[in-house]
Amino acid sequence: MLHTLPDARHSPTTLIRLAYDTFGARTNVPLFLIMGLGAQRIFWEDGFCQLLAERGFWVIRFDNRDAGESTSIADKLTPSLLQLAASGLFGAHVPIPYTLLDMADDVVNLMARLNVPKAHIVGASMGGMIAQMLAIHHPQKVLSLTSIMSSNGNKNLHKPTTEVLRKLLKPMPKERDTCIARGIDFWRTLHGHFYSFDFLQTSKLMNQAFDRGLNPQGVLRQFAAILAAKDRTLALSQLMLPTLVIHGDADPMLPVSNAYATANAIPGAKLGIHSGMGHTLPFQLWPVIIDDIAELALSASDLNRKYDGLKQVR
Image (tube, rainbow, N blue to C red):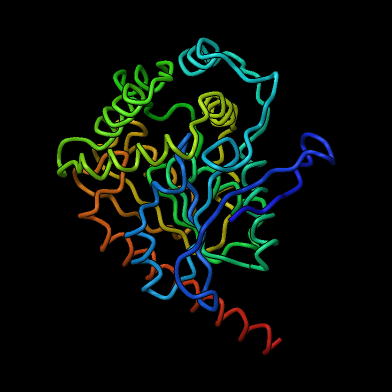
């Protein structure tokens, strides 16, 4: 399904169309899944979403702007690979067509279109950064925050390995088989060596992503938004909502120091470090991760009940 949303950053006539789908009953408590850099919503795998739905959530996954079936933002400010490399290595300025806050506002607008006043928010990688921005700027919309394999924006924390950065910045081939093979290889690198790598499932997802539409220029624009984002440590320290930070200790994209910094910044945040996990969600860890998300949602419900009780007493 598609929803058309206004984009105030560009012009009143510029519209963002977000493609989304859902799992579970519409009457269940809503939970939004925000995917990472260049990744389409299908990388929140159907099985993972279904397990969340079985725990009592109405699960909404969507393609971010500039990914999958959502709007591609044609913009003359799109940075080049060279500019992104210079920014990542030396802190050079890069042009930014939009920010992580713009992407967080997309989620708020989608919530409004779906008539969802509040929701549990779960983000992975760049999606975790967007989820943090959503919690910082729209805390009234967030029941709980789960930030997975993400960062607080501190540029002094450990960065991607040389191998990951080299593959990330390599131009995407246009030929189908070569493009899909490159994607599988990159996903295998992110996955690490501890958990078994599901080649067939990854190949299926890469083929689906290719057929739904790849957006190499969109990846550059999203990456620019990440690089331009400021340190969120101080803003995160002001959050007063149930928070869970999940990370792997073998993450080659955003090393585990990013998780400790994020969890330490947010009062009362719970931290789940998984041994051997890289920068993917191994299916072997789905049950424990979903248990932790559901437990966090329960704590959010308890907190809201206490808050409502205090309001009644006053």
